[in-house]
Length: 243
Image 1 (tube, rainbow, N blue to C red):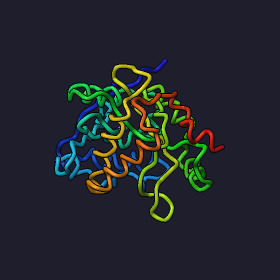
Image 2 (cartoon, rainbow, N blue to C red):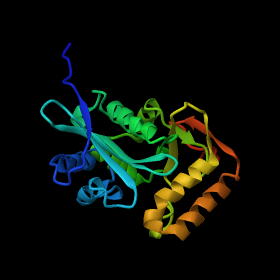
Image 3 (cartoon, one colour):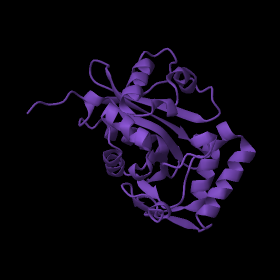
């Protein structure tokens, strides 16, 4: 049985690093809607630390420095938020995603944070055109959620949506919020959810709108103290009841 070449993970800090362009190609090839992601032309600014957040970009490479995958995440005041993780189509099954996840969680832990948030589409709320896009690039949203579960993510059981990016510029409602708790808890404090999302949204919504959206999110969750974490393959109860 052939042995896979070693995979190494490193953080990019040089805006001129050629791995940035290679990661941009991975992003383009591994996600059905790359236009919804952070554009590659922004990567040099991101790794140079010119933004307001502590952003990170990690790449996984083989012995020949070929980029096999990568991830972008932010270290926010209370938790991390993963904006994207992708593996090149020809590099699936080599543990690349797991290595990237472990490296990012080590960073989160080292910063004294409690875990990593992310969001991911759920197949039950994708449009026909989105489903066609998945097929076009050879991805499967159901398999993706299984993979995220295997990496430690769990679905946060509340009605989450991005405030903008949907039809007519309104909210984008095909996403679920996920969380990977470093302590393995099966619940997450609602205050941690709203604080993290307010921090994450602030850069593009502004302080007042971000605060209002975080308050609305808490209201939709019933202003409870803690929110249940479900298997990442599941959608929150709110959405399950809509079908």
